[in-house]
Image (cartoon, rainbow, N blue to C red):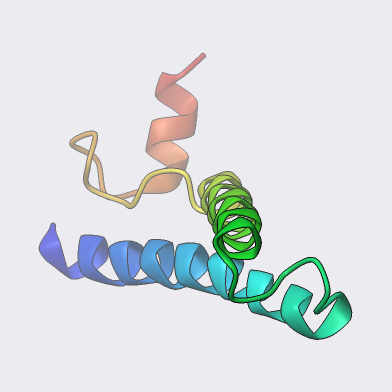
Length: 83
């Protein structure tokens, strides 16, 4: 089971970090608003959080549950049992 969970968790972390890192591009796009002042850092952190959430949701949409978490290793069996 852990052989399928580790890559899934790694992908999940990568999606969150990538989404949050995209907020750094805002500093280049609008440096007058997203800067190192407390207000700018707050705006940047809100943007990073939103990007992380979007990355998380999009990854879960693509890879909802790794094989083996529901007791089956074959995705077709899971889909047949869900009806």
